[in-house]
Length: 368
Image (cartoon, rainbow, N blue to C red; front, side):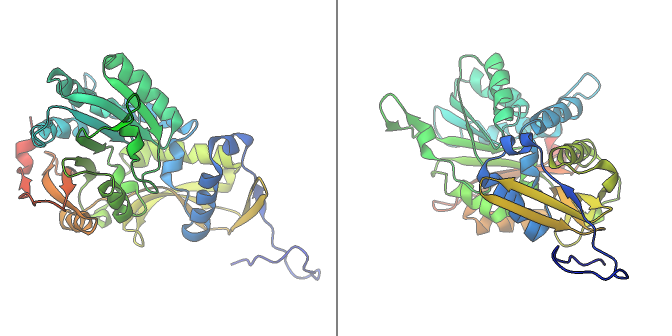
């Protein structure tokens, strides 16, 4: 393997030199990401050889995700159901506010995307007169604009609020739930949704669950979805997000980072170290990625044959997931698995008040 040698070293004519192609991100790259986010990308590249998937939803990445969702996930005449929408429907009795013994609820949609997954669920709650506010939270300002556009078209009479947030690094600030006119805290119970099987994309699920836990009151519920099963049993067939979405993210990163298409390839595989299905960018040449902004001028050296993860998803076996939930100070109210045994929905509450017995429905009971 070639070794990186400082540029001021001297070479004799018979010693091969280290050659490296240089990639310089576009001006649009620096306009999309904050300084903190760029530093996060640098850290992930240096430590884990990864560009976290969450950053791919910013800028034009929002359109990539929206196109993927509309094409492959929203029910159509030839595809009459969506696993996630079906799970919300089949678990409605546990998350419609009756469980919390309250008249109104605030819906906090974390990672709201385009808000399509919650359309039917919110519509049903709205008919019952239970919704106080809908708050859309996402890392992407562009996706929040789509969320607002969609939601206000569907439900013009429901108060819509949106804010950017990175749930891997933040709690849910209570100021968003304040009555601005009277500066009074809104104590309306929250239903916190974290859909889109996003839980399996996080680098540190325990930290994310703790961030949710520290944002919840005793009458709040956390509802999230994820794929279930063994990652190592992947059959090598590229499906869903690992197919179309990973392909588009790969093109987006090459374009924004200034990497020549012929200098890399997209590799999809099971990664033993992270026990995840990944899509990696494999480099065919030595590369220097130069990140320069403000007073920082940072070079990241990537050697020929090295891979950078750009898309990653981890399925969870149920015992593993229950253990993570307990570690975070949460407890399960109810969970169910879809009719294909591929996806689960989990409903949690805080564990600092009287525990509830975990309730589950058989997998086949979730089918319509």
